[in-house]
Image (tube, rainbow, N blue to C red; front, side, top):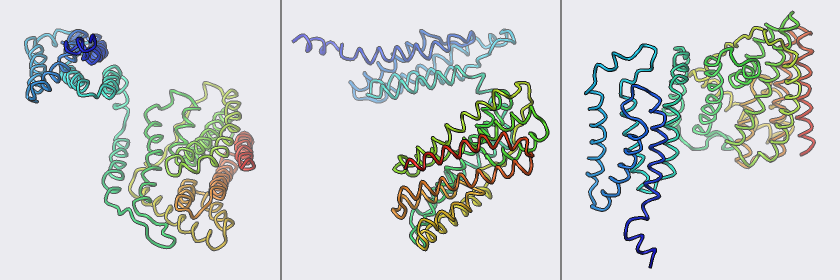
Length: 428
């Protein structure tokens, strides 16, 4: 009886209005920090509650125009608040952050819309969006700094990646062709997008963070962009300098450790069922290498100059096409060799292709695993062989370019990763 009385008085809607109030206070708290903004805590809280109220009344009367009218009213009031004081912005001291009004207007309209979403049963999504909006507003200086640091080539890289992902990928047929039904144009290009996306993250971050965060982060980002290019650059700079050799060795080892993380992420995305066998191998190599990387870092002089490795844009069309062709060749070669000579044939392909690129043979093996043409154990062994082959190739680069002094420091880290991978293999 009592519950029906409360429901009849509309009390059951109280949680929605309280959620709207919390969302408005959250966004308004950030706007309150800006002295030139025309809306703060109270205005944003009221706008969110008004959004929920307008949505409720719109539902009750069955007219969506009431909700739209409320949105226009909120927009009109905040715009009028700025227009009524056009000279105030000019009187603000130059050192203060000036709000021309557009950000606050959009934020207030979003707040109204989020309040409406809560009434329509989208409270969780509304709260998530409110947190995202507040984060964007709060980190304005950092976001502006990142955008100012992006060079033209970085923006071009993002645009090229967008072309690869949203223009080329959707038009490719999702159908298997060729021997063993191994070649699927859509799947092949999806692998290109995946690898390009990971590499592009490191490529862009290298130019954004620069030298401020030290060798560990530099090695991590260099490994995301290209561990081979990072090894080449630091092998040159670590030659003949004892202090620099510790930094170079640390960056080279970390960059190669990141390859293991890349393979782990790629495997989780492409063939999640292969993770139980892959994880001990990849994690073992990473943890063993981490011990040596930390030792090299402690030996490094904090004042040693850091060099940013210059890598090519991984989203360039010719780079993407080159990787796509390599992937297809390795995929068909792996399927053919595995059919012709069993696992030993696949391992031979992994050994050769891993010298220059680990991603292609990894994705090819995982593709064959998904097709049921390759078991879990051969898949894991092939990927491990490709990684160790690539590690040997990069160590050869260090020896011939950086000399034996640097090679000794790198050899400890590479040897530790090799031991970790082998321990994981024996655990299979």
